[in-house]
Length: 122
Length: 109
Image (spheres, each protein chain N blue to C red):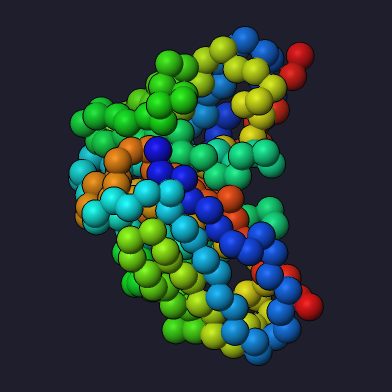
């Protein structure tokens, strides 16, 4: 079955870069059937969409994070990754990767990774 | 950005009762669709409803979604013990960004 497995450090220092990877199994990112997204959840803001990428590298970002975010994809390894630069304590959250359907456009998320708690602290 | 406001913040009900959760969009956009998710402590959200009213794979028919325009509803008919959780709505089909509501907690009365 399709699974999304997240990896990356749980602690990042302020001003540094948060990096997470999502390894997809059971479906090929390169098939182009789905988008692949990142969402975060913090107590103060609930669920927040960060951005989404397609197999060909086309990406879409939340306007409030666009200047600091890069989402990339490696179809040969079937992974996609999140980089969030210049982090502050307000970026502390549980980060999720998820599969996003393409019917209307960037649609709903039907499969989620296990979540990664990332704490920004020195 | 379309802001989704969920109400009530907390719903206190007994097993077997009917739960009605509301999600209101800040603006009317043609072709806006809603998805609903259930989240339990320590778990990722689980898709319940997409396309406003279509149940996701494996979701029991006591979960139903409805609405259009700016008013959307998730109904759980006959709450079971595993249904007491957090519920989020998400809009798509309108202009980016994709947005989520702040959540409704369904708790045991």
